[in-house]
Amino acid sequence: MSRTVRTIHDAFRDDIGDLVTRRPVPGPRIAQVDPFLFLNHHGPQTYPPNNRGLPFGPHPHRGFETVTFILDGELGHYDSGGHESVIRAGGVQWMTAGSGLIHAELSPPGFKRDGGPMEILQLWVNLPSRLKMAAPAYTGLQREDIPALALSEGATLNLIAGGLGDQRGPVETLSGHFMATLELKAGAAVELPAPAARTVFFYVVRGRVHTGGHEIRQWKLAEFNADGDNIAIEALEDAYVLFGHGEPINEPVVAHGPFVMNTREEIIAAIQDYQAGKFGPPPRVSA
Ligand code: MN
Image (cartoon, rainbow, N blue to C red; front, side, top):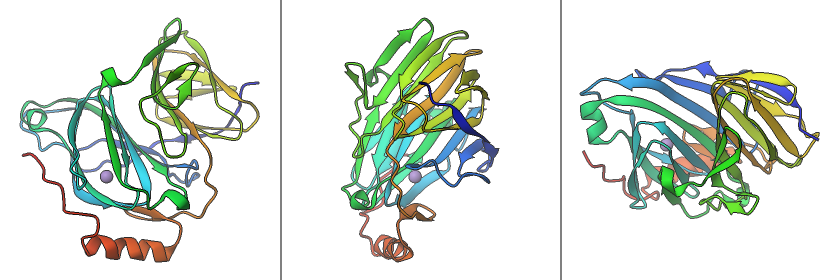
């Protein structure tokens, strides 16, 4: 039995300076898709030569994970744990903020000089209370590090985390998430496991698909009912879909800017710890 769609949510435009940004969650009718908290869809857009690049200089996080999908362009990552990498189109950054770190997410010097196309997704994945103070970690994956599974005619699944058949993605998450992107040609059809007890995250980055009894277009997020153990998807035109699932955490969420905890007291502690320098030194950023 394939799961049916319960609700469809629009992504709302919320540009950050000249950075085109759309956000399906949180939104007016949706606080989170537990355990998935937040999605920013930046671009697609083309930066001119001699641009200032992305505006995400050094800032802290605690209590969750950021997963960044570089669909086009490139993204430099620098953090207080000493991690530094530039991830190119097709790559993914999986960062566990856990107990706290400071990172910068910036366009590398060559991109600022030459400009070019840019499209990036950033998903925030919550951590349960028992893992909020886990050790910070960062994994930077290029396109070639991510298995591209040909599922059926015209359907490719880029497996980032979790298992599918006898394949496993390169990221082993603390909470056993499944995370993938789907590249579908018009007419392609796939059926993917998505056990009823797990929350599905389903966002159409571009194109148009049919799933769970509904048509889902670009810039729409679908929530599913717990009435089956898989998801059936058919592409009505060439499409790109962010698809994941995870166990709901079912705990209070108290978020304040870059911190996501369970209580107000924990937020105050996060701010105090950050101000006291306990998140480590700000990262050194290559100019
Ligand atoms: Mn950040």
